[in-house]
Length: 171
Image (cartoon, rainbow, N blue to C red):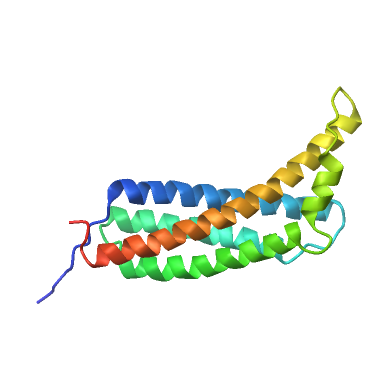
């Protein structure tokens, strides 16, 4: 005798969660891949946070791909999502802390960004291009920090939602 439990996931919430997590993972992966390229181009050491961000972003995208495959097969288990959401929650929390230290810690990026980009430059000149690149790098730091937080919040949401699914609260 084979007994199979059916789990009913709320479609709209699951789709929204998937889209937001893909946006967070893609942004984190893209920002830190760009930072690695900049560090390599400038012959500087690559801080641990950059490959960490690339790895966590890629791992998140792999989770979403596996999730979509399991949804298509109607085999997405709440326990699977709780486990991986917790693992990624911890990794995203590590990313939040690491990025916060870089942004707001000693010799912080935020202070340098404010000093360098406080006086906008315009016109067709190399100085304008330099200012635009510096402004872009600063905006990328803030985007990465924000999406680490967004990812953490959404992984907490997934753990709660998966717990509710396992208790059949969405019938």
